[in-house]
Amino acid sequence: MELLDSLKELVGPDHVLTGADAAPFGKDWTGKYISTPLAVIRPANTAEVSAVVKACAAAKTSIVPVSGNTGLSGGTFADGAVMISMARMNSIREIRPEARVAIVDAGVILSSLHDAVDDHGLVFPLFFGARGSAMIGGVLSTNAGGSNVLRYGNTRALCLGLEVVLPDGRVMDLMSELHKDNTGYDLKHLMIGAEGTLGLITAAVLKLAPKPLAYATAMVATPKLEDALSLLNALQAATGGAVEAFEYMPRAYVQRHMSHVKEAREPFDAPYDVNILVEVGTTSPKEGTARDDGSIPVVDYLEEVLASMMEDGSVLDAVVAKSDGQRREMWDRREQAAEITLTTPTLVDSDVSVPVDLVATFLDRITVRVQETDPGAEELVISHLGDGNLHYTVYPTKPDLDHRDRIRRDVEDVVRELGGSFSAEHGIGLTKLPSMSRNKDAVSMDVMRAIKATLDPDNIMNPGKVVPEA
Image (cartoon, rainbow, N blue to C red):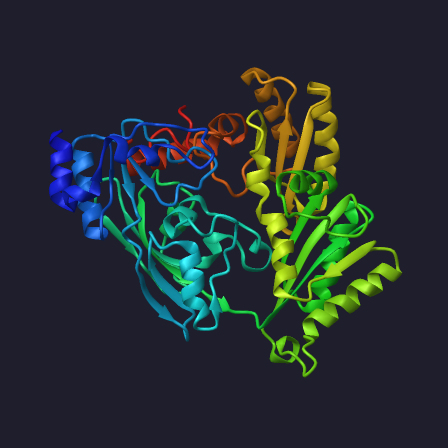
């Protein structure tokens, strides 16, 4: 009670939530992790965050930062901890179009930033289904990926500078707007992806890109998954590297999507096993400006390339979007993946990456391995195919935890055989701690533990996440 009274003095009593008011923060988006926070604190600025962290550090009380709470790995589990919500720190401090940067608070919702920079003919090129609730602090803390990594990179590649409150309450100013700054250890990248275990991100300098004048979007069917990489490489060569998204949806995914989304329909007149969503964006006025008849050169060009590939048999079918509505329908099919995947409570979900030319190999091997462990288990796949990231889910025939763990180990084994990673874009949180223990290089783990112990000796910043105990 003494700590809570102090926190009320620091941020105001209306912004210290307890009991029923704090309860919604104790349940993550998946519903898998439910906790009872001691309190949820909603500071208004960095100075208040610093003061709150100092008070918690003095009381040796755990701190769990929370943004939009859209994570999938239990990173905001906060039983008995003080949660620090970034929701009130939602100012877009500055947009500088000529420098193509935005300076923002950590509580800015991703879609709000999209809207704000759109007015300047720019884009912050990080897109995924939860963009209407995910906040900048959260996407930086998890190094989020999404559908445009192929062209722009993940969140780490989109950040120039950070402001971070350390576990002792000191504010570390890394708010550089420089593209080159070779002055020692890169502390910014240390904080990005750390999931709040080393400090609390309060602000960032983000890189912006020119908004494409037009998009060419299509659903494409190929004979085999291996043919898709040839398609990607051909499109990259034909468009000068302008492919923004390249998403794989196998037949089973299309069927499940139609069974769970009322308005959903087939992407083609005939069913195909390999369905690819491809999108090209152009900033060239020559390619992106509509002609008098309303046609857009980049769309026509994509259509021509795909038609040529259909003639030689490397593409079976293609539908090119001719309106915003058709484009939105294609993207809805992809972005509703999380909802349709989690419709069955008993599952083994994974977020893995392998070299881009080994995606088909992974799927061939893991199907055999899982069927050996659990004959009759069903699988569902959705993939950011252009960067080798797969969301591979198994619906086992038995619900017990040991059985599901054996399937998870099967996935990890195949990933390791192919030189991949068991975690691509969703973070570690609590869910992947066993995977970290089993698969992460032992020396790397020792270094991570040493960094954590040095910056957070009392282990108050999001304890128990990311780094397994020795």
